[in-house]
Image (cartoon, rainbow, N blue to C red):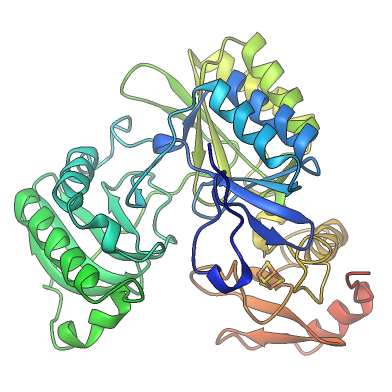
Length: 404
Ligand code: SF4
């Protein structure tokens, strides 16, 4: 595989194994297995290669991608070869997300995969004209974990036969375009994509917002309340398997932890995993007892296995020293805040820690941001009144840690 390093001027592009991106701790490569599906053996293989070729840190992102950090010019080819040797089925072409458990959940309103396939197929003739970040979400409902995932175009099942089409946002913020049956929803999505493609590689779904300014969604709920997955959940799937859910603290996991986890899962007879949005990993277990054993084994590692783990309240970008742009050691601050918070009362809000004002990992919904700025940091309350001493307590707890 030929490798191209993404320059700073090309940062609009997404880093992949063939196009790693320079960051503060070396090169960053992103892998998107098809539908997030990967076996424990293959994930262990990726982690082994990441340990050898990178700095031993991997991430599961808010969109459910797998990232390898700290690669070097001289190790990228080795990393590529290792992943190629595993024979993973990697998503190519249009970035199109369906839920990690699409087609496997009893309470899914409709199977999104046929629509996703149809959109990919019908857009294939002009997909190369789209900018690299143009993305689509097809959400069939159920525990999709896609509500917070932003997309240029999003299709959401309102019931088994009806789909809502919206543009430029997550489930809360995307602007309503129309409600259609499956076939017309696909046609609408493809037509929107074609318009974006015709506008050139800089055009995004948000550029179409004025066109739909006056449209109002019908009286029915525009996007039904989502079912959520949480770490520690055990879920019966329609194919007889049982899903057990864990999450990575602040999205990061060491190769060592991942290798140990995957070894345990293979011993338990688990053959399938799904990388999931919201930095989660779903273990597909043959039965309930195995699911419980998988959670029990995971609890002994540095991953999140309980829904009340306070680390879930904190979203942190890579920060210093991983990212060269950072003015804040986000992960150290996040770990310290979670450790010092005895319970939810001490950490009553969702917290977003950002190494700089770019806010790469800004979550959807309501939160407070602590943003690193040169020589200091600022706290931004997203419409929430801070407790009077919150800022002082936060500042007092941890001295600002900057990249050395
Ligand atoms: S928000 Fe800033 S510090 Fe954090 S990962 Fe993005 S560029 Fe780096």
